[in-house]
Amino acid sequence: MSQNSLGESAVQKAVQSQNNGVAANATQTQPLWLLAEITYRCPLHCAFCYNPTDYDKHTHNELNTEQWIQVLRDARKLGAIQLGISGGEPLLRDDIEDIVIEAKKLGYYSNLITSGVGLTEKRIQAFKDGGLDHIQLSMHDITEEINNFITNTKTFELKKKVAAMIKNHGYPMVLNVVIHRYNIGHMKEILEMAEALGADYIELANTQYYGWSLVNRNQLMPLKEQIDEAERITNEFRQKVGNKMKIFFVVPDYFNNRPKKCMNGWGEVFMIVTANGDVLPCHSARVLPNMVFPNVRDSGLEYSWKDSPAFNKYRGDSWMKGPCVTCPEKANDLAGCRCQAFLLTGDAESADPVCSLSPNHYLIEKAIEDSKNPVLASQPIIFRTDKNSKKYASGESTERIEEFHALP
Amino acid sequence: MENKIQHSDVYAIAHHHRFQWEEAQQSYVILFPEGMVKLHGGAGEVIKRLDAKATVADVVADLKATFPDAEGIEADIIGMFELALEKGWIRKI
Image 1: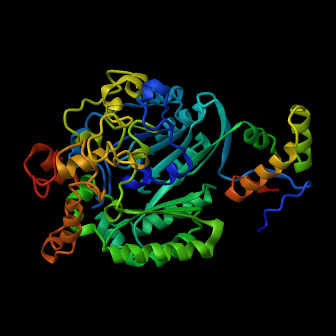
Image 2 (image 1 turned 45 degrees about the vertical axis):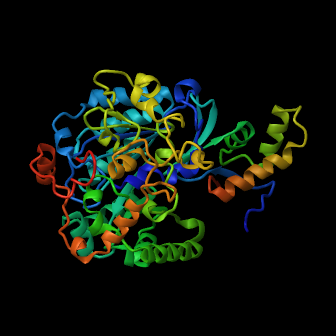
Image 3 (image 1 turned 180 degrees about the horizontal axis):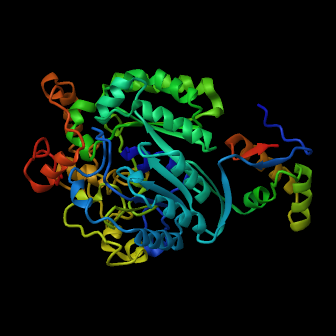
């Protein structure tokens, strides 16, 4: 899973943002997208995973099937249409079939976001019969070596089999490839592989730095020149294949002068319910200080979306500081990402340091320089494993997180 | 481009796309992997009539009969077909 894949990419190209600058409780903004992060358990150990580094503490108190079905019903009443069933690896739960059936009944357009591990003929047939609309499969590289290295698992052959299974069941082929230093040089081959697999959509999601990918930033970040070349190859390929395969290239924000409009605005379009029932406006919001997020065990989704202090805190622009508050461009990006601002500067209300107008922009420039430093870059990757997560959650380890506020 | 719309053409919603009325939005939407579009009034009325049987001429005639007060809507309807085809929301039968 990448932060990009759901956070701020293809979805937003089609979903018109609504009511920027005005609190939802005054304008009835609706959550169009419900993301169910149904479990944080995962058989893969991807170095770029955006899941929280302390995810292990949320693996023992997952919502049960009945609670998820209630979440689906309540979110639908609020206006949610698109449902993403994500994780961790959602297929580690044995009730995805029930959730899919309920989603169909309620009229969601449902999407299973998966690594493919655990997908069998029996399960995919049940998903098809139950009315699942599509499956988004993560791929990592054209080489077995890089796939197995970056995921820290031997999953290369399996992914190819799963891709064929998805196609055989009449599903659109939707691929997500997270791009980083280890695969950015294979862009043409990755696109050719996607074409050969009959992909209808492919998202090339440049790594953004949250959770595990932030810890591994020096190891993952490609060079600016590599990104430019990757984009050039992508554009060339797009010309060649035309409408047959839709290609989304998500530009990495560290190399932009302006921040991304994170989540299309805080509490504007996306609602995330986590494995343990927390209701969040973005995947990584729990890193923010002094925030209490609602939980579906205690309060309903309507309260969470419309009235909870957490969802209203960064709606609109009344919370902004300088330079954003007087910036003529503030409606374009709503000051960027609150989590990134906090993780890198220690102040959640400051401008996203990605912005060249931010007084903290030097932090991004330094991060880019650091990633070229052979000493830093040669430190080993810290993979997303239960063991490593337990160490972060218990405070036993603070390796490479000291400089980032509030991690884990 | 192959986007020339003929009166005898027959269209349906594209594969892997779903068209439905959304009560909460008070509008028709088209849903597809990774996205959705909200269709405003007239656009929804056009797509609603695509059942893989009706010709473009049938759709135009039906809309004219349903909205007798709307003048010169034929060009708008054809324009919607062109847009929907270009965007890949509909497919020619």
